Length: 135
Image (cartoon, rainbow, N blue to C red):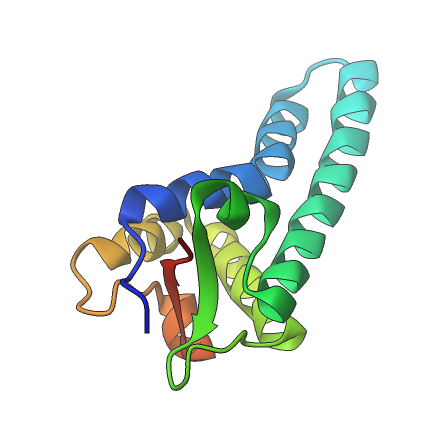
């Protein structure tokens, strides 16, 4: 199995894959103007689609657009193969649930690879996946 990805690479890929949905959701949530709310709501919807497509791509091929840009890939811990579209989506869904449930679990999940031996988030542990260097 290739070396495990660095935390910074993982965060960068997460930002590229989920950033549009996160940023537009924050802006729309704080909007005081209905027109602004609608515009960022539409951007947020397309950001959500972008995040889902990237999660499924990462599951199928090992690389989302963000992971490819940062030279990392998602792999099944047991054999290094792609985890599949279902587990790719499950990882994304679990990340969202942890952030929505309360910000603290989302932050802990994001930071967990810093001290975990296999550099896994909680969603990686559930999906039995790791993020490794692709190059």
